Length: 96
Image (cartoon, rainbow, N blue to C red; front, side, top):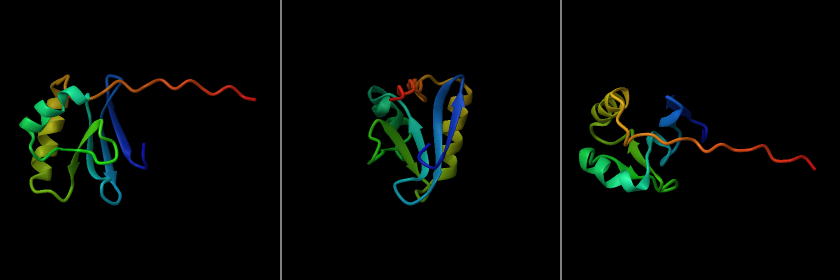
């Protein structure tokens, strides 16, 4: 996904690991827009992704990257419903 690695748990996409140029260097945190504020209060290092504003972003160059990434993974492992989205099913295009 986006030249990055997508992580799924229970059919939900929960993280995207990216090692490209900014703003694609860090973790993308898929979540519903209505949950952004709650997650950003819990993790002030998260920002709305400038290209994909429906998801949050943790830049790898930011201070505390390892601690925040670890805490996010722990919340995912504990089943936190605020992190992750159901991927949209794309139907194949009909051939002409």
